[in-house]
Image (cartoon, rainbow, N blue to C red; front, side, top):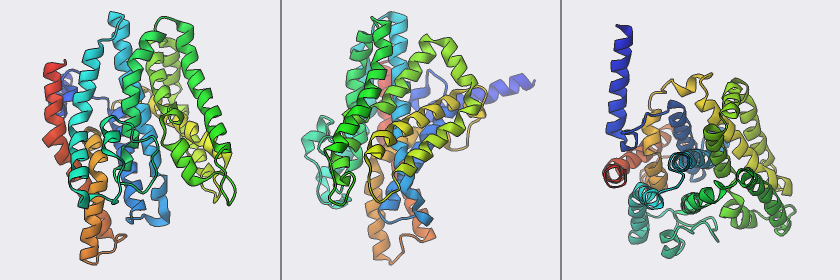
Length: 383
C-alpha cells in the first residue's frame, strides 16, 4: 500500500510538472538541478536589485553576480548532455532539430523583451542601449560597457554563441578521444593565459587593472568566459563516457560541497580589495566556475539529499528563471519610479518585499504567456 501511495504521489507530481513546464513532458525533473537554477536566479535578482538601490545589510547583494556562472555550468551540462546523447545513440547530431529547439526555447520571450526595450524607451533602466543589430545576432556582449539598458543580456549572448558552435565542436571531437580530452584543457589554460595577457594591457592610473577595461575586455567577452560552460560539458561527457569517473565524483560529493563553497568564497574575497589585481583577473572567474561545477556534482549525487528532495518552490523558480532574468531590470526601473513617487525608501522592508514580488510575478507572467506556449509548440514540431 505504501509503495502504491508513493507511486500515485510521484505520478501527481510528474503531471503537475508537465502542466507547469512542457520541457518535462518526456523526462523527469531533477530536484538538485531545479534547486541550483532557483538559487542562481535568486542571487542574480538580489544582486541587481541591490546595485539599483534595494540594498541589503552589509551590501551582501554585491556577491550575487556569481549566479550567472552557475547558469553557465548548468547550461553546459544540460545542453552538452543532450548533444552527447545524440552522438552516443545515433553517432551524429540532428543539427536542424537542435537549432530549432533552441530557437523555440529562447527567441520568443527574448524578442518580446527586446521589442519592449526598443519600442518603449521610457521603461529602460538606462537611457542608452546597444544597437539593435547586436541583440538580433546575439553579440551584445562584445564591446559592452556598463551603464546601458538591457546590459544583462550579455550572458544570453555568450550562451547563444556557445549553442551555435558546440554541436559542431562535439562532432569534430567525437572522432578522437585525445582531442576530446585535450580541448577542454586547452580552453581552460588558454583562458588563464588570455586573461593574464589582457590584464597586463589594462593598467589603471591608480594602480592595478582598470575596472572599465576589465569589464570591456575580460568580464563580458565570450573568449574569457568559457570556463563554466566547458566544465559543464566536461561533466556531461564524464557522466556518459566515463562511468567509473562519474561514480567516483558523485561518491565524493559529501566531501566536495565544502571545498566548492571555499573556492567560491576565495574567489569573491580576491575581488574585495580597492585595487583590481592581475591575479584576480586571472583566477577569480575559473575558481568560481570550478566551485559551481563541484556544486553541480553534489546536486546530482545520490549520497546527498539534493537529488531526490524537492525544495518547495524551487521547481517553479527554475521554470520561470529565464523569463525572470529577461524582464527583471524593467521591473526594477518601474518599482524605483513607484517608490520615488510615494516617498518609499528603497531599503525599507516594504520596498524590498515589493521589488521581489513584482519581479517574480512579472517573470511568471512572461513565462506563462509567451515562453510556455512556444515550449509546447517545440514539443510538437521539433520533438
